[in-house]
Amino acid sequence: SVRPQHRDEAAEQSDPSAAMNAPERHKAYLLEDDEQRVEYSKDQKIPNAGLFKLNKEDHTIGNLLRMQLLRDETVKFAGYQCPHPLEHHTLVKVQTTGKSTTPIAALKLAIEDVRAEFEHISLEFSVRRRLPSGRAVCVCVPLTCSYVSKNAQEKVRELNEEA
Image 1: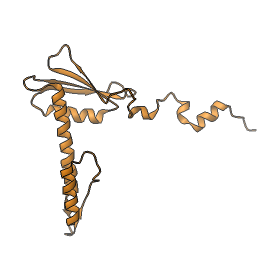
Image 2: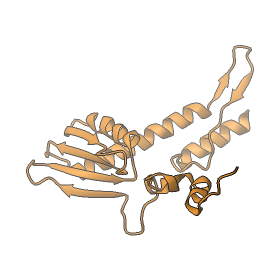
Image 3: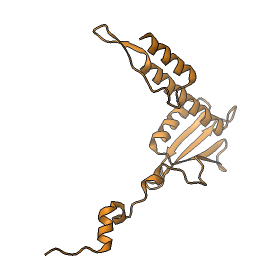
């Protein structure tokens, strides 16, 4: 004999997340209407320090920014943490020497430097390469990428036309 299904059981089969206490996936990467991408608060106890809350970001951007900040000689300390896997934000703490830069300026510079590195990498991968057989090939990046500058896009177009 076949056991009849209850309405709740049928709903669980059609929507797997209804059976679990799982958060909705889009809440991990879409900002709410009143939510800012970056929030800043000045540290009251440590001079020339501040805490950035990067909403809807994870270890990828946290570690990338931390490493770039530590390359800056005016940065004394840079660290990040992701408080909990179900909290979709990353905290980045920055302390500067205070001589010529603030934590906000240091983070802006780090973001610009990372963007420039991405541009350099995209150009390197879009330059014509020679295979061992001697045949020329051109590996191209999409020209619609937001991190590729106009100059880089023009260079890629020129290389593609030459190929």
